Structures are given as structure tokens and as C-alpha cells.
Image (cartoon, rainbow, N blue to C red; front, side, top):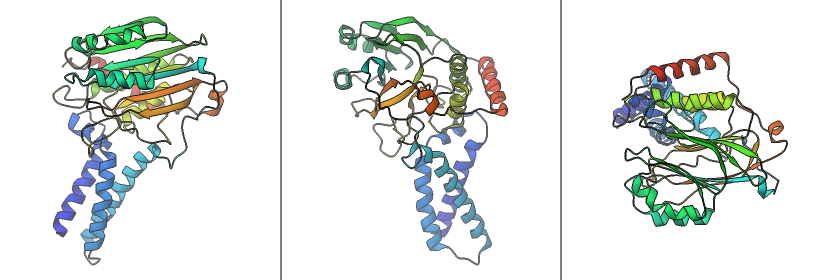
Length: 354
């Protein structure tokens, strides 16, 4: 029994150390995802280990120390996404609805055909903007009824799981579909006009996951996110970046993206809002994200119900709030991190198209 616990403890330590290696191989980056699961497993193992511990064995001190360090590190990584930490985005006290923006983001799972269940979710949340990803031609037709209420659209349906559809009741300015690094993976960019006449820049992305079926390395995923972050960095305007990042909130890449763009994460201090996997309770982590500039405060954020996709939808209502910039602190980036961003972007541009 003790040998089994020791082996499992060492495997957990390895699973903790691997993501510290700045390699882009999918099987290394995949260990960024299950930090909550590794933390729980580590606490259980630690309990067993202490129960079976024999203090006169030196190697057991070593294994115990490594296990404690591994669990402690995992806790530090996920702690910001709990109610135990201060909120990065403040809740608004303003009730000026004309300056609010309501956004619903959903990965529909391309082969899923439960469109009526999704339309019910849209009716329930009544967003201003609806982003759907993994949308093919079937989904474009199935979501056609939205156009009665959401007349402004931008569409790029694809049968490769990277299709995107945008439905908006807000006027869109300069809407465009871009293929930032791969001609098979679109992204969407535009401004929308709020009823208050304020304009908000919006960027929607869905890069490759760390999965050998799609990409053996995360080089292009990381570069795409950082390229968008650099674009946001260049302007001091209300901006939202959202979508299925195929990356978790606590990864090094997402941290670099936040520091590059200066965007805030409304989940910090509130919870993880795990959106994947909707059909597996044990394997859940936050893949679908909404980041925004410090011009906004939070009105409401919800993880929607399971409805047929392998992702839960995410809903957020934000308010342009006078004085919010002075009350909310942007993430800081040091020189070394800036150089790493440059390197990652350059590597992504030079990476061969899979």
C-alpha cells in the first residue's frame, strides 16, 4: 500500500513540474488544465501518506516534502479563482442600462443538434451579442431565428470545428473575419455601438487545443492570443476579448495574454466558472473566457446550464462605469515577460501550418 502511495505521490509531483517547463508539446501543456483535480488528489494522497508515514525512513521525508510543495504550488495557482481572494473586477453600483453590454458565449459542439435548447438559453439571458463557435452550415441555418431580434450578423460557418457565428442587436462597425495564423481558424473583430452611443471594441477567438488530433504543439494557439493582446495594448478604448481559448485561466500563456493586453478577468475573486467538460463532472476547467478593459465593472456573470454541448455557455453583463479605471488595477508586465511575448509571437508566425 505504501509503495502505491509513494508512486502516486511522485507521479503527482511530475504532473506539477511538467507545466513549469516552457515547452509547447501538447502533452506537457495539457497538465496546465487539471490543477483543481491534481490539488484534490494531492490532498487525498497527503492524508494517506501521513497515515502510513514511518519517520525513520529518509526517502519518505523527501517524498513528503515534494508532495507538500506540489500541492502548495497547485493551490497557489488556483486560489485567485476562489472567493478567498480580492476581486479583480469590481461590481458596479451604476444602473445606467444604456451603457451596459450583455454577452453570451457558447461552444455548441459541432455535431450536437439540440439547437432549440440553445435558443431557449438565448431567450432566457436576452444578451445583446451572441457568439457561437464550432458552428457549421447546419448551425447557421438552425440559428436563423435569432436574426429577427439580432439583425447584425457576422458569419463564418465551417465543418472543421472552427466555425464562428456572431449575432448582435447592437450596430457593428467594421466587422471582419481574420485568419491570424492559420487559414483554417477564423477570428472575429469589430466595434459595437451601445445605446449610450459609446463604442466597444470586440475580439472573438477560438485557437487550436493542445490535442494531437488538432495541433501537436501550442505554439500557434499561444501566438494568436498574444497577437490579439498586443493589438488591444495599443489602444486605450473599451474592449472585450472573448471565446473558447482552449486554454485555462491560470496558465502561463493566459497570464502573459492578460499582462500584454492589460485586460481584467472578472472570475478572479469570484470562482472558476468551469465551462468544460459539461458531460464529465470530474474533468472540468475554465476554457471559455471573457476578458475586458478596466473601463467596465461587472453587473452579472453566470455559467449557463448544460444543454447538449460539451461546453457550458458563459454569460456576462458589463457596465461602462465612469471612474472604473482609477479603481481597478491592470496586470503589470515586466521586461522579461515582454521579451517572451515577442518570442512566442515570432515562433507562432514561423511555425509550419499543420
